[in-house]
Length: 150
Image (cartoon, rainbow, N blue to C red; front, top):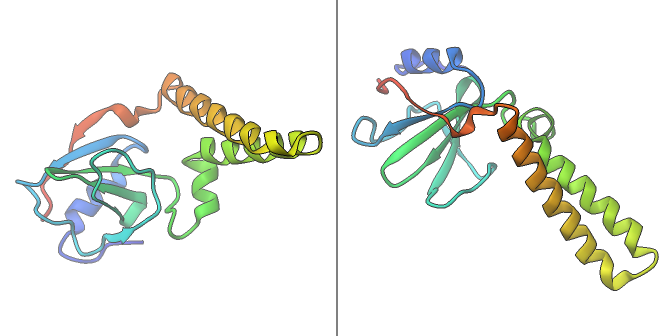
């Protein structure tokens, strides 16, 4: 998705930003997002998020009551969900695979335990993936400032 509207300066700034670094945009500075951003239901929800949006150059925005939080992804989840899982959120794909494998492995012997084993394997894999991202320098906890939206 490219931008060719009045917000071109802001969208050009997005293109230059590193991946997975969050930028806060207070709502006092920008009451709304540029028109090239579209609402999406795909994305990790966290406490306080009202809506999520996708925009040009892999932009992913979470709307909070008082601010927008923007970061760039490799792949737009709306356009290529599997590619997004592979490049930007592999811990979710790994947790789904671990859960499926655990469910299949235990389902042969004890069907009642297979769902519990699948959920446990999935949760542990997801938590491990999140921890590895943090330890390997994923800057998703860094908070920077974005320029004003035109």
